[in-house]
Image (cartoon, rainbow, N blue to C red; front, side):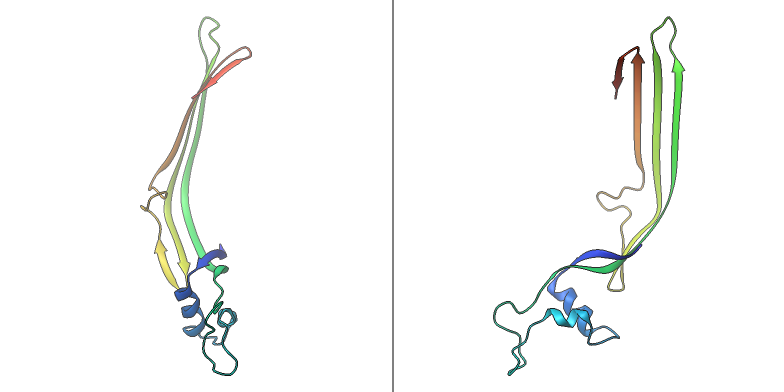
Length: 127
C-alpha cells in the first residue's frame, strides 16, 4: 500500500522539504516566511498535520478453521473455531526510513482468536 496517511512533525516536514531530490516541493509550502525578511513568521510559521507520505508492506499467512459436531442426547450443537494470523513482514516506510513493526506492542508475532459456540434450539452461547 502506498501513499499512507502519516502525521508529520515539524522536523519531518523540514526534512521532506530540504532533503528531497525534488526541492522545492509541496512540503516547502507548509512554511510561511516574511516576504521582506525571508524569515519564518513569529506566529503561524508552519502547518503540520496529516500527509500522504508512507508506504506499508505487509505479508502474512492465515489459518482459519471451524469444527462442528452434534452433541449426544439432544444437547444441541457445539462449534469450535480458530483464526490465526502469522505476520511475516510488516514494514512502514516514511521519508525513506523503514520502521519494522513486528514485535512492537500491538503488532505481535502471532495473532489468534478462538471461539466456542453451543446452540440448543433458539438458545446460543458464544465464548
